[in-house]
Length: 131
Image (cartoon, rainbow, N blue to C red):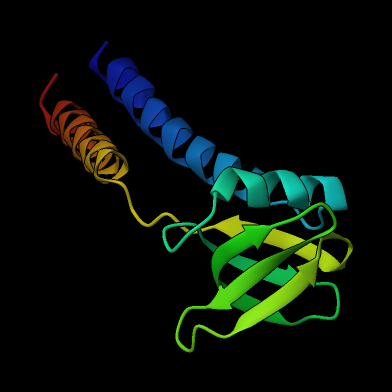
């Protein structure tokens, strides 16, 4: 009975760890349509807190904040120099909104790591105990 319980706990631990890796790998998207880029830029907002990273179809990467968004393009100001760049939505390959690390996400990750370590220790303790 103990060996079965140990095996079940270890399988549950492995399943939760590999599921997180598969989920994270599937979350990436290679290219966006101009409409997708426009929606993401609008979702980021306007102002210094609307930080984004934009990859263009020609391979260049721009980091900054959205100063203004229009119908066919938007103004991106550089993070360091504050120089404006006008970027057309049709030239955008990918947009990432940079909001920083949230405290709730960090606490959740810490709790998951703690629970996983606890379950692993229980599984090892049960597996090494005498029958």
